Length: 215
Image (cartoon, rainbow, N blue to C red; front, side, top):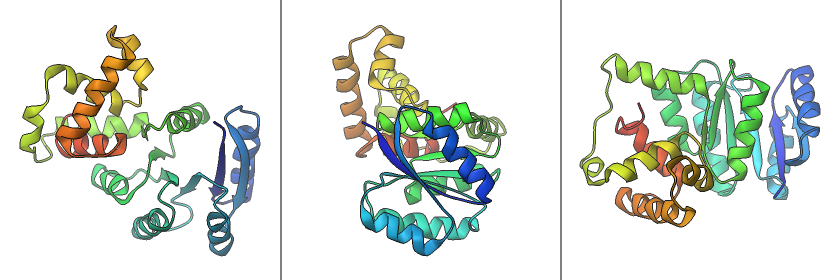
């Protein structure tokens, strides 16, 4: 299903250029560019948009936390993509906790952005490659997240599938990679959700980040 996207960003040359590139793809039906908070609120109230992208150009990180929380409260189905300004691991984790669905940064390419949109269309979360490298470096330097006991309840296969979910793979992609059926993947996914007491892939990634499962 095609999606409708709001690009809330500036300068206009960048935002409109991105919109033009995206208009040539097949998975975005409508794109609205704006840089005014009042206009953004009106677009969101219309209920016509399911995707919102904005960057650190528009507000401070503390304001992004607050706005994300407010927008998710009034628009629970809204998928929020943040383009960060080289945020650290703690800040990225907090953004996901506040409700974003995807994170990219200023090093992300257009191809990575389109990969992100396609992942969201499959109801997956997305974390850009550079941010993943930061997570690995964070762990490698001994700054481990505090582990929770639930981690030990996951089987080896469930942990393997959890990591692939965190990489943004769909159930179909996972089944191909692991040479198992889609039904088997879905069964494992349901067990992971139950064991971690989360509702969706976003919750799975939050747990993985907080418990040093992504390596």
